[in-house]
Amino acid sequence: MNPFASLLHTIRIRQGIRQIELAELMGYEQTYISALEVGKKGPPTPEFIDKLIAALNLTPEECEQLRDAADASQRKFVISADVPQDVYWMMRDLRQRLPELNSAQIHLIRFALDLKESLKERPKDVALKLKRRRNEEAHM
Image (cartoon, rainbow, N blue to C red; front, side, top):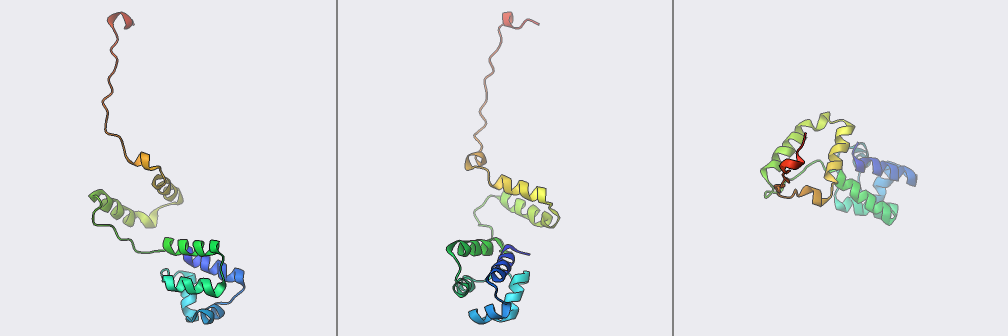
């Protein structure tokens, strides 16, 4: 289940409202609400989210959570044309292996993505000068 589907279901249940009632409040079909909640439909449009917020009188925190969940639930990803080739290869590998990733691998990938910007930019290789020992210092 995607993050939006889960959050929509949780909010609706917390509000004590049935799918048919929510659909009527918003002007949508109950089947659409159901499809969103089980994850059969991708995340809805911003217009739907605005109507949902108004219909359920959500708090600012709930509004932010709902928009974040909708963003996290996107199924399609567009790569900018000006990224390095390595990005394309990485995305291909990720796309192919995504179904078989375990939770440890997912956490590791997310950890790597959260590294500070300073770690992303490696300094140019700086040749270190080694101090040579003098003959008298190199006794074995």
